[in-house]
Image (cartoon, rainbow, N blue to C red; front, side, top):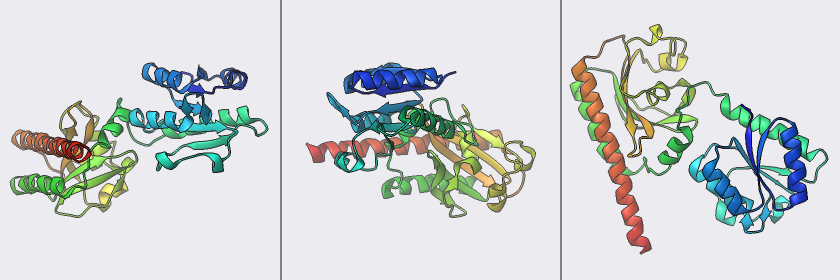
Length: 297
């Protein structure tokens, strides 16, 4: 499958020449002359990379990148322009991450193609499985304030309940971000964020139901995972936490330092607690949204 690129530039001559060079290199290029046209293309076409000039007749390139980040946060974005960095107004786009490549440099189209290849390859070469809806999942996670004290207090009650009823070393709730898992409620240990490629929850969130691993040393996915050995995790059961639209935000997990089985009753109990944790997260999100409406009203 060729790499699909959305390229927005109001200068027809420049856009046509660059698009032709990219197409000749084997890329599937969708051209847009305006911000509105580019936005419409994003709504109907899955793209692997977005390239835009800074100045467009109905806006500018950073506005297009902001739209991309709302729906597919990890799609590579490249500002390909003759406008210098000192002339670019980023006031309303603090924290927006994009690559910058001057369009007036020698062999600019070739350098652009190389940058696209590098960014798309980097995005695809990760050492863990990705959910089919990864971009939408990450966008959904951004809508939750998992560090909120009231949210954490509600989740702590659930992890304490699990620790009381199931004989394991650790109980925790983890949310899986783009590159790491953060643990927002823990019993039995205080866990620091863990690189995503080392987490079991990365695998749990792609499962339709509870994931059970009775012995990590006997599972090909985890048998050589040194991070799990350092954390004394030898057995695991994890139930995904879903947003109302079905996006897996993270997992409700129990682990032990010895291989062990989990009974049907224990698995059903964990599934129930995971559903309740997801309800608490969604309730807190709705409450915050309502408070913002009152404050803005």
